[in-house]
Image (cartoon, rainbow, N blue to C red):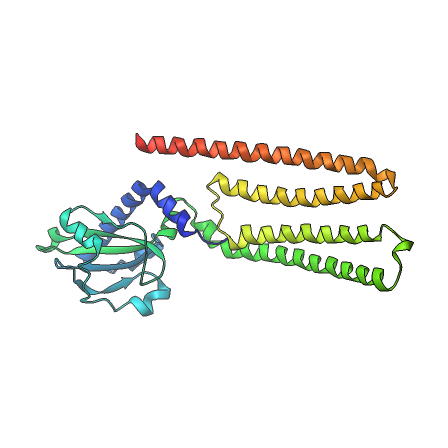
Length: 314
């Protein structure tokens, strides 16, 4: 599955904003201690993999020294840069001048890394005799994965994608095989033998087409749900969406097969009548069960979100 989308990241940030701010306060305290002792704080990346940049500002909002970049892939472009740039117009700097406690920006797209991030700024004036400020930029997606205990699963994502990719490839190969059989039968029907020899031959071709459609739809669902899209395993709606799509694929396939079986019965093969009726009843049962599942799942999630909002309000 893909990494967390920006909308999901912002929603999680709003949900856990207090926890995130407390965590960043503790990180700033650790970094501030390193600034006082002139220590290199890059070892913190092992503990806090969401850190991206660290830098200091003077009382006028001018950067003191170069950036300290925590991300290896950005060190060449961001390290040893930034000295003396004027950041006085940044909202977080203007806010920290008005209120001396730690300030946090809303989520924004970083110009430096093109990631969704937030910045935190803390005053260091007590240590230096004049106002100086310590600023850190953090990757919001990795920060949320960190606080939710989702780091290990996130690191395994490429392996999951590879496994699902192999499965999807096998399904698509099977679709190509079925389509090859379909084209061969159509050619044979049109140019080799007459339909009068076997009036049910077109229905056999339709069955192969239906199987190819169902398998293709199944492969597409796996590709979208498990490789291309982000699935938030902590939300019931993601699981409900996946199950709904899989059941819908099965419903379409069974419905078409039931219709074809009914046609066979109408053409004189009465032994197919009861199986067709049973399949139609199975389709109706699946539809009712799916409707109940979707309704109850949505209602349960609404109650859960309402309870969380009420808890925050208190």
